[in-house]
Image (cartoon, rainbow, N blue to C red):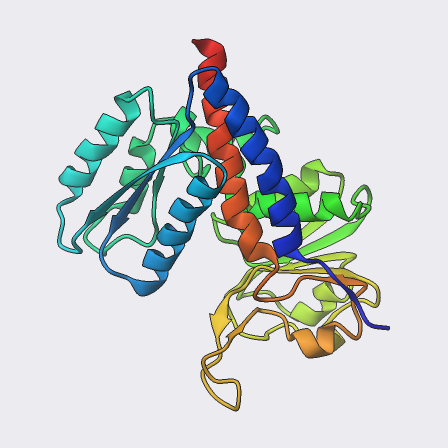
Length: 289
């Protein structure tokens, strides 16, 4: 058996087409959805992510603001800029690219963003709302994963779902979303004993741990849906420098029923759901006005 590939690029293009229509409808009513992105430092990966987010906005007819600060910028400078953006009615979403330099208190910075503009879904108010099952914004990567599962009509009610990774960005919110969808959820992490015991039970397996090819084919239940959130660069061998996920794709695809590739899987959907959240914020603001 060879798994069907869940193509994130194709689904992303479809969703972005819908976003462009909604953005055009808002523009016709005098509102241009706007995302403000703040980048501190010159981390190459972060710079690429920010560039892709800005480009994504432009392609669906949204406006973007990009503020770039040197790595030695004072936290107070960034907080002051966030205060300005919070007060600007023409800005609907605010995103601070992580990670921040070590002298920053990342939690304080994220908490400074107005909850109604926190399109990453990281503010404590939004985390709490997600926990209660009434989210204002769903964190973008888990949101993208749920959209992918929905697009393939993956049966979630009563399914065994296993998440490898417990980060605030992916693992924890992913567990809440799958729980709300009716799954029985297990969250594994670095201290889990006998990881394979858990992964082999999974009807839906989400790998989000940041370790290259950690999940191999013999750790997967035949026919399972495998979602690979990891993005890693291989350090050695003939494929050194190439991107790979947390799942060993070549062995996993011979066992799984449905699988996401890396690249071209979850990655494109993460930015697409960021655009979705920003557009929803603009629609809410327009409704209130």
